Image 1: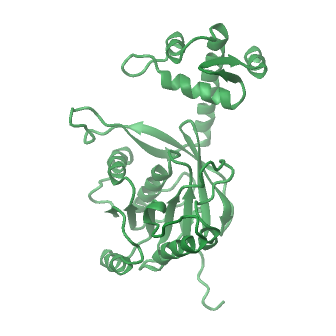
Image 2: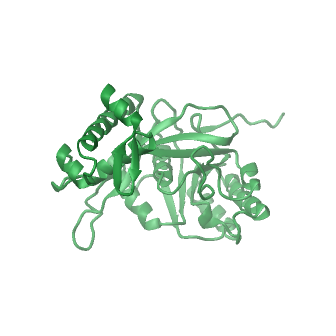
Image 3: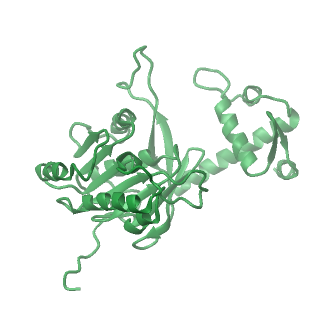
Length: 326
């Protein structure tokens, strides 16, 4: 006990220096968007809502799609008003062996003056075995990631992980053997409902519980993100969603769902384009916003207010009751 060191939070209640965390979610649920947001907040020393954030130097290992990470970071610089050439965040693109390159990483860290936060995007990209479900290989991989916490500065390490195939949202554990979960200090999770992400944890968390935190995924553009044909290239960034804003979004989505229920009750054979035109839901180019209709229909179907018969949707008894009540 004489050598006990008090916890050193990087993001209050969520991340601690010297700890290894997984952030587990299915593909497309906003793992990278959240990791980039955490990176920017830590580098800038900006709070996450009511949670304190300690300022620190960050390293982002972009092992999967580093071009997409560039797009997002450029857009985030504009959205969060920081200079990407000045902010104390460093990126390494491409896959490599962490075990074999640890010495080089240590020398880089020493030149930078220490690190506070490291993102592994993704854990699978830096896995050096041939079977993620092999317990021994998963354990060695987790140990390699744990070793990064010993770099100068005692950084917090966040590894973005995929869950097992077909895992439910209530069973989001990192893909691989149990030795991986045994090695990490916490398994954060991200679940998505439409464009809202909820950050929480499952299975394991060394530290106090925290209240689930909501984020909004936003599609944005930037004048530097232009295709060869001159068109703006949209990308996705995450931002904190306050409780008040979430309540307003929930009310707006409920209103959208009620309108779709009524429109389908009037015309069960209507296509998404027909529904969008009837509801006057248009895209920026003036065409029918079929995506907005599809998202509302999927939510209604998930909540058992609609039944699907091939490409046709019909109101269930619950849906008719909801429509009548509304």
